[in-house]
Image (cartoon, rainbow, N blue to C red; front, side):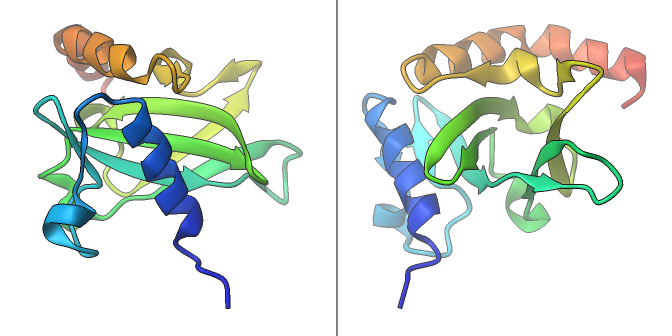
Amino acid sequence: MTNVHKPHNDAVELALKHLPGAINSDSVFGYRKPYDIRWSGFNLRVKIARPSKKVSQNKKRYYYTLDESKRKLIDFYILFALNKSKIEGLFVLPKVLAPRRYITITRANNVLRYEGFRTDLIDLASKIYSVEQQLPKLVKMKRQHGK
């Protein structure tokens, strides 16, 4: 029997290794916890997705379902875009800019959605800090565009 949670657990472990001093919330709350990692005052929720294709279009998209009941306790989503066992993309998306129920990452007109939040494991910690510092400006941009 395969463990369906293994890819998620592996992604959490990878993130923990690249966030010095991070705490795996499994060790504190157990399985049904509101977030996966507590690091530097931030609550981080790790999500994984594999590519899927729309029937009407010939392009990959990564689709993440969010749990609204846990949303209020989360500061950032760490989004792993996987293709088989390879990481194709890693994104740090602040909760205040994330849609309420679903996040979709896809490429349209040669522009990757959420490209500005893309990072790699080595720069994960610095990307979280960078996005946090830019947050007031990013929230203002979001309000101006009405999304």
